[in-house]
Length: 173
Image (cartoon, rainbow, N blue to C red; front, side, top):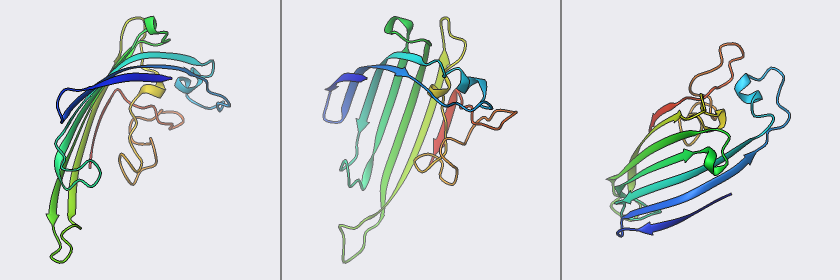
């Protein structure tokens, strides 16, 4: 369950604050799964506060041909909100758009290059000693690092080779 409220400071600058409450149940875990995954078998509760801010300088929200979009996302999970684990994470994303070619006879069909970067960092605090595997950073897949299967780029378990996720992430395309 999640809910929040947003506010537009200006036409381009927006913020949103929200709360996230989840009860995560995992079933049919393989006997050879790594311990981080097995720890989820009994279920885990997550309660966190979220803050997101975006700065949007794109010329159009859907058919963008110029400008940029910057966003940051901060999440803090705490036992006071019912979370079994205490951790925080911050994700910063930026995308720049630039039209590189405009056809002479179809000026509405611009060829646009976009460059995207994403940086994330997370850590545990309080009584928690580790970030739950479901909250770690994973890369790979169509919207992250193409050419790799979903969530397969990053640290892997030394015994079974399963993805472990990380506490930091940097991706770009």
